[in-house]
Structures are given as C-alpha cells and as structure tokens.
Amino acid sequence: MSPSLTVSRIAAQQGSVLRDLRTASLREAPYAFDETLEDALLVEPSSFDQTAVLHANSPRLATFLLYTEGHACGLVHAYIEDAPEARAFVSALWVAPAVRHLRGGELLVNVASQWLAEQGAAEVHAWISEENRTAMRFYERLGFGPTGDRRAMPSHAEEAESLFVLHMHSERHA
Image 1: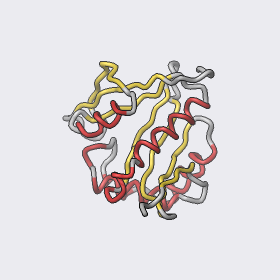
Image 2 (image 1 turned 45 degrees about the horizontal axis):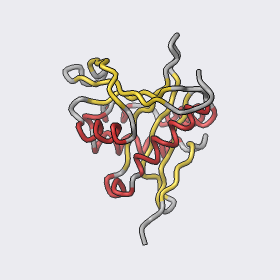
Image 3 (image 1 turned 60 degrees about the horizontal axis):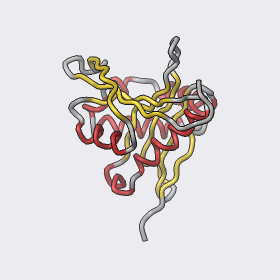
C-alpha cells in the first residue's frame, strides 16, 4: 500500500516546520532557490514563526504543506505581488526526494494555483532556474509555458531564471 498525500495551508504555529522544510530544500537543491542555506540558517527562528502566522492568515500570500502519513514532506508558497500588475506566483516548491514519485509537487502546485484563482488570479507565474531542466519540464507538464521574460537569480547572479505562466480557467479574475 502506498502512502497517501495530503496538502493543507500552513497553521500559525508551524514556524518550526517551515524552517525545517526550507533548510531541507536548500540543502538538497541549493541551485533552485532565491536564497542560500547559509542565509536561511542565520534567520532567527522567531522570523519563521512570524512568517507562518502571516502565511496562515493573509489573503495575499500562503504556504501550503505536503504531508505523507502525518509527516511534512514538502511545501510551496503562493502569493500575489504587491505591485501595480499584482501578478500571482507560486514559488519555493520543494518535495522530499523520498516521496517525489508520488506526485506531491503536482498536488502542491495545483492546490496553490487553485487558492490563487480563488483570490482572483487569472494567471499563475513561476520563476524557474534555467539550470533546473527537471523543474522546467515539471511546470510544462502542469500547463505552464515560458513568457520569454528572464532575469538573474537573486541569490546566484551568474545564473538566469525564466518566467513561466499558467492561464487559469476561473470565473473570478483579478
């Protein structure tokens, strides 16, 4: 029998879970994120607590956690940028290697995208490292496509990332 996966929005008291998942993701795939493990380890634990409270309650940003058999094993952030365009994004997607074959990444992105659509987003964006071909193929399988926009990665200026977009089929639009 294979383990079942569930996704839920982070709870306000889960700052330590957020910190554990974030540092695990940076240890396992440092090339894929806009932050370094060293930076994350310097952050006070209370900052993760504050982030969990905000992401549990905000109408503009959220973190969703993936669980298998009651254990947190992945996460994704969803947010609507604070800018005139107010584009919606998924970011910081990570699933523990031991459960990737169970399609947890797909479940996380789908739940986060649906939440963004419920907030009024007509499109969901994702910045993806150009070095991470696996991530590009993953997002393309979910219906995301390249916009043609590129930028230097904030934490690895020598590497570029591309902007991908998913057009949501929602009756509510921003």
